[in-house]
Image (cartoon, rainbow, N blue to C red; front, side, top):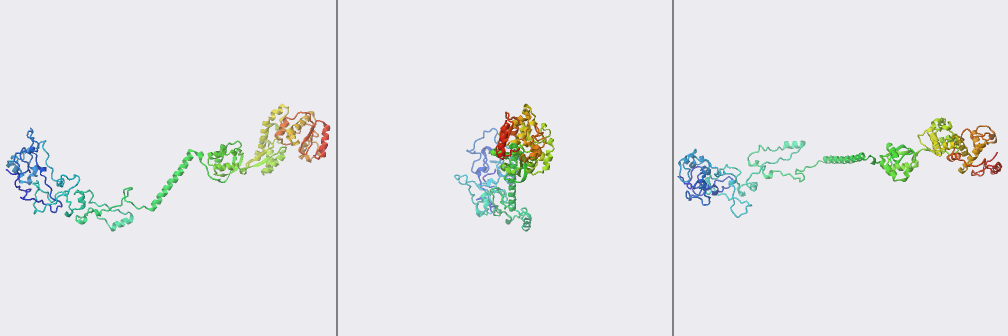
Length: 611
């Protein structure tokens, strides 16, 4: 029978006396032995003294602090000795032969390896093998704050190479080549690194790896790499010089914006970035303008007074929008909207006259409106035709005021069918070039000019209902125009025209020769003041002194007042009239004697009342 408290033999045996663990050269002290960790509960040993317990404890005495489980019907199995003392081949007392032959208190009862009972499911797990956590130093002061780390006790002196477990520790201290992750001394005199002191002896992943130094790119970087090659981490030796220290790890300046090393910026790259940014801004502005034009094309407008020259025609009856569209087509303005807005705000815009205007290209809407309202901008020739002009004198006036060749104008007058004459004229142009002021455009032809005058007569005649009223009076429209032409030639005062018309119609009705010298002067191609006594005796279709009735054609272009007087003459028996004043007023009478007396007064006054 072996006494568990007696001396031990074998690999794990300890000498008598104080035991000093062999810890020299390991950098840490002996592990602290805790007997309570290795005590086997009584219900496991079946009432026998637990291995590693105190020698004075009587065999078979149960631990009063342990719950008595002897009445467990299953009966906890006995813990094998090797669970407490390590492998059987390391201790002679725990060998299979010793267990088979030994007996007594604490023995296994001589069981062989085949007869050893198997572990019961309710049995405790075997003790954990010795490791890093077993070597950590426990706290000495139970009242100490549990959050404060305590330094380990200094290592005991060397005992000459023999060491045993403190306080009967089973297994003894670990060998010198034990796990390098064990506890480390916190004493700086023991040669431990300050980094290990702060980490508690635990290894820090990546602490022994040196970060690669920043490499330079390009040719300079390659040349520097060739001159100063970096040592390979795989070929570093195990000596002290090859170890990596904290001060050897390069520290890069930290950039809080992106967490990476701040690099020096290339000025060219900065300038290029600014150019790209400026291009984006310009693109956004131009794109926005283009988008506005697409969404509202009437809102765009040019600026300034424009440049160059272009001719624009404003047609008769054009509205402001029509004029604006014409200007847009000629690229005078950019869109209709700005011009119309400016014209609606200016009351004078309604006075824009038809015609050709000399404008500039790409003007603002406001500038274009002001240019149209300026009379000097209109390219035209104004031809004013007074009442009483003959066709020949009318053509000469047109040539004079427009600068056109008289031959071209006469050629146009020779083609009455192209001029739009009324059918009752029988192709006669005399009397139908209505007296008014005409505006001749630069691109108007001679036919256009004469046609415009005939069209004006047609409009006035339609307003006066010339044909209808002539038919009601029993006269032809041509006769009315001829009478109107004589009324136009005989007086300059509109209030006298109905009386002159009455005299002509009374004479015609009574078969009396009209005796109007204007007809003779027209036939002779002279002025009434240039007639001689011989001219008065000539015989011709236009000499109303010698012939009764109306001349074959009108003798001039009557105005609207003369046409109205020919359609509505005054009523009475007037047969005579003679010039009475220098202002052109006449004396009217139905008595021939009164006429002769008035004629004498006219001659004495030198008013030209002769013959």
